[in-house]
Image (cartoon, rainbow, N blue to C red; front, side, top):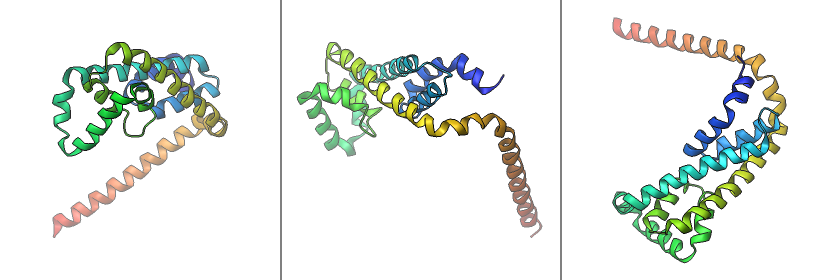
Length: 188
């Protein structure tokens, strides 16, 4: 079974699971794969939006339930946490939607939102809107990037065996050199 059939068979599930844990890289790769015609663009957007929404919803619920206890562990960042919580209270719509676009806030953002006690009836629809916008933007970027990466991917299967052999040879050479050094030190 080649990599293309694996992507066609498990691609959407992998996108959902991958975007729960990590976002932008998986989403961009989903766009590239959609450009290659292995997956359908609207379903890639839906998959990564669903995964991103689930991940942020779980983190929000953790923040809602355990937020104050978790935030006490970050006492050296208390000024930043307080500032973020004031922003959440003043601009909840912008903060919830914008969190997924702010570098470094992918995990801590929903936790802070939950800890700030923003009601679930406000968070859930904003989380859905933010996830769809985020998925659409990053999948589109990946799709456009697929134009550049596409020719390289078509040759990937052909070159995969060569790369595996090259890596294996490098590992063997490095292991041999380390063994020789270890043996030489053992003699001294």
